[in-house]
Length: 120
Image 1 (cartoon, rainbow, N blue to C red):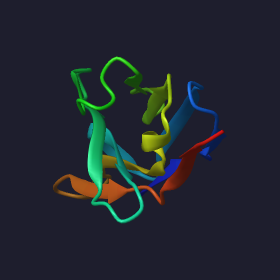
Image 2 (image 1 turned 30 degrees about the horizontal axis):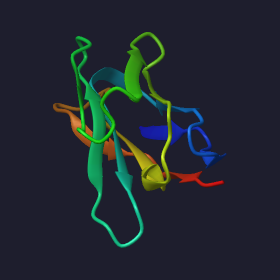
Image 3 (image 1 turned 180 degrees about the vertical axis):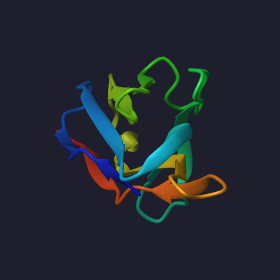
Image 4 (image 1 turned 180 degrees about the horizontal axis):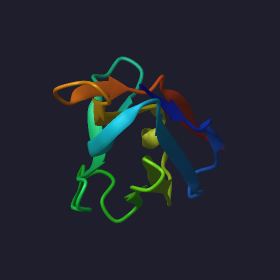
């Protein structure tokens, strides 16, 4: 099982970008899904998370600007980023708790990371 992220990119300040992340492979169930980010010389931090029931939580720094959502039928999570700021520049990682077919428990899986640069 794996998580495949969409490509990030270069965005001007104030712009928008939508990231997606799809879980693939033989999956029985998907629990919580989330986005993290890691800026240069900084620790990885949680950006937003969504439970299988749709409950969301956000880092204070992105509240009101970012929206996390998921499509359970497609095992996909999205991150809509609006009003982007230079301080949002980071590598964004998808994270999910997946229950592979034939397994007895959830396993935590990370995407490969996609860079987002906010600059004029």
